[in-house]
Length: 178
Image 1 (cartoon, one colour):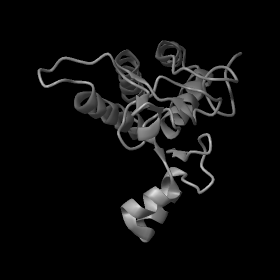
Image 2 (image 1 turned 30 degrees about the vertical axis):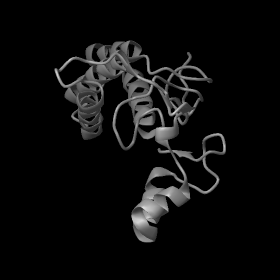
Image 3 (image 1 turned 90 degrees about the vertical axis):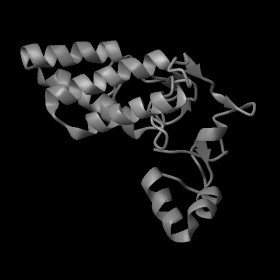
Image 4 (image 1 turned 180 degrees about the vertical axis):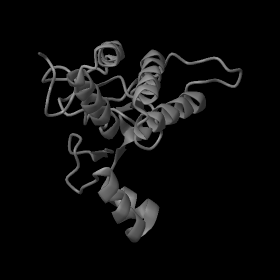
């Protein structure tokens, strides 16, 4: 009843990934061949992985989306969220053989190994939302910044691919990549 048909996930406000709820849907689909469970699962995981809650460049999931469309995240990344989401995406890949699920899981594991593991192999519990005292600074991009970094030709392609506009989609400060 709480499923958001337009954007996936549950509820009409800010959204948390809630991997355990989706595991129940996956199991229900597998055991009872319930297509509605798979529709909810697929729509939600697809929207999460396309949205700003998923780090399009570095991999890994932010803690939650501050909006209904999974666009603007709270930029903190938690180890347990990412671990549970990796399991969910891999379980869904094993059940459906859809490569997108495998790709997101792999990118998330690579992020966890690179950014959430110290030199001795211990895991960090979280990665702060703030960079230099500014929430999301590391994850928000301006069109000029992208064009300068990649040049006009490649910058325009990247802008189109990641939904980057001059108006931005994050508090007038730039763009969260989608």
